[in-house]
Amino acid sequence: MKRRSLLLGAATLTLSQLAAGCDSKSILTIRSLKNGIPAQLVSKFSRDVQQSPLLQVTQEGQLKELFALLQEWKQVPQSKNQANLVMLGDYWLTLAIRQKLIQPIDPAKLANWAQLPERWRNLVTRNDEGFLDARENVWGVPYRWGSTVIAYRTDKFKALGWTPTDWKDLWRSELRDRISLPDSAREVIGLTLKKLGKSYNTQQLDRVPNLKKELANLHQQVKLYSSDAYLQPLILGDTWLAVGSSGDLLPLLQTEKDIALVIPVSGTALWTDLWVQPASVKPVPLKKNWMDFWRNFDFWKPVPLDKKWIDLWMDFCLQPQIAPQLSLLTKASSPIIFGMKPEDLPEAVRTNSVLLPDAKILAASDFLLPFGDAGIAQYRSLWQETRQVVRS
Image (cartoon, rainbow, N blue to C red; front, side, top):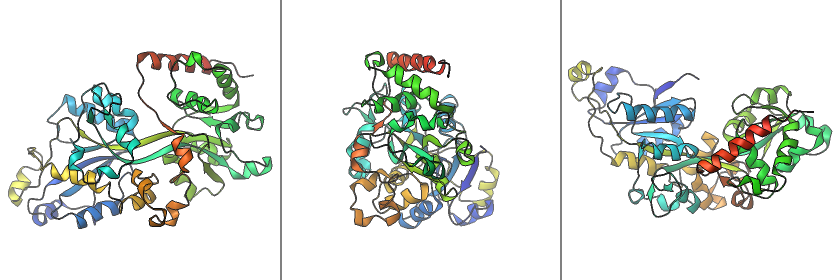
């Protein structure tokens, strides 16, 4: 996907507007996933925060591109395109910590930190190896979250006389060769573990009875494995059921009326997008004098940005009054909504079982936590073995 760079606000500003109208305002630079920051959120930040800096948001198509930028900036600390904040998926957090790509965040500077549910605070509190440790540093600020869901074609299932509600339904004979699954060992082995009453984070897979047999049987059901090309087959009806990210599938419902979503009642995998701060931040302010601005346009020298603006943006995203609109506009829930009264939430959030799942389902769901080398090797070996099973 092509990269898009937006200077968000009322509109994209021209060079003359930047120089003449901003009077030495600082720029807070953010790297975000595509459609991760609604323009309405940027406008509200500018209105609500006194003397706020300009927000320069550059959007990337995939989280792996954002992670690659963090790696690039470590190699080239003086890079002109380095951002003050980066959106990163929690699944990448361990690597970012181990490779020293990011720096700890001080939650004491975030007035709304206590609004976060405990499991989200715990998720980002880790040691220097990237493993959860409540005594160590906070490495990111949770921004929004989603889950692995089941999408299915209502027109096809109407003829079957039932609809999927849980992982066990993927093994039903009516769905032979009608399913797409993620091309991911953690996801596919994980959902099979959930069917067997285990956690997505189960290790020592050889001690789980019937796991290999269940995976082999599920493999017979699958038409394709894909983590990024599974939507079109579902839209066309080549597959009747797909397992994928709520972030991909919720927007699809706006145009595809024959597709419905369900979170499996036995629990699912959760993901969270975080704000992380690169290990070396090099912000760029606008020049006060027009001629100075023009002379230095291609050679801006990084100078320190008051860190309070970085903290204020992260704290702003945790405000309860922001959470409902963030959830609706980004099609991913703010974790803050779980501490809010139902009557304070818009109906479109309150009645959406994907944005606001049942508390029991959420409690039974798992973030994909980091494994050691032994755990990774077990999953990789079992995944390769499963994929080599010949379909009958």
